[in-house]
Amino acid sequence: MADLSLSQLYHRALGDAAKAYDLPVIEDSTQEVVQACLTDLKTVQQRVSALALFSSNETLEDMTPTYLIYLTVPYVIAEVQGRVRTVERDERLASLIETENLYQHYVASLEQYGIVSEDVKLFSELPVNPASRRELKIKQYKHEKELRERIKTVRKRRQQRIAETENDFSLIQALLPSASTDQDEEDEDAVRESNLLLLRLLYGLAQAQLKNIADELVLLRTAPPPMPYFPPSDNENQHWRLDGPVQQQGPLLSPSGQPLRPFTILPSGATDRARLQSQVFGPGHNLPSMSIDEYLEIERQRGKFISGGGPASEAEPTSSEQLALDAEMDGTREGDEKEEQKRQKDERWAQYTDSHAKGEGNTMNRG
Image 1 (cartoon, rainbow, N blue to C red):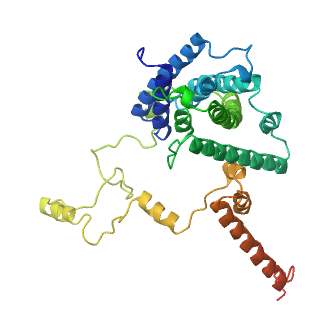
Image 2: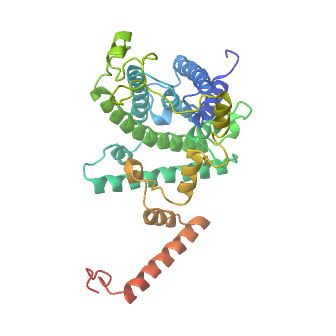
């Protein structure tokens, strides 16, 4: 690890973070990747502090453009910390508090250096009114989409290869300074622009994560403590038994004909018992032809299950809102296609309203 440069070490840590991003948290192999990634990230954080790459006395103009990418270190540590497996409530609470502190440190750093504007800071203040909250979330979604498009444009201008599917860790990894590239060959303005766009994009994501963490912390702190578990004793098991001990000796029936102990009506011969046993699960029995999971999957494909709804769908734009947002991408082929789809949809609706009077379908069962 000592032989690796700061850029190479951060590049390796981001690769591990991207690898663990899509893996199940419960698996031990995932936790090994997460712990190795956290070790590298904390080493990167210590080197950045030891090299004094950033100072509270500096302004944004004083900073070296290639160093701006290392402001993302607290954000990446917070994201990886969120993938740590926790079992007990106290462990989860401690992990959430540590993650919250890291996000707050990242947000405060960007605000201190004036990297985010005052308008972007307003996105973190959710209004009480649901309609205003939804409108603000749509603006935040449009702002995030615009930043991603601008980052993609800058990367194309810098002749960087863009993969089909990328997560945020891969995006940071692509903007790291390369040891094989001479810094003089890089346009400082392009490097500064791409790094600032990335920092502003992660700022909005960090603010969203802080809201989710705050909600989960309220639930954990107000939840009742778990009930202590005491293993049942043998005496307690005997006390709660509904049936008394079975007596194998004695008469089968009482003088009045009441059964005194369990019995089975079967022939006593070994040949008869073997014959009856061979008939169990014979051709006449109906056995299951599929598992429960297979049955549920078939029912889901038939549309028997309703999906969506809840807080997750509230934050997402509707199909009409998404179409309107996509139609605003001027100068792109996709934007022109979406604009044409929106025009056809509006035209169909106008034709429908012309040929159907308002309220004609609401006859209140009067024909």
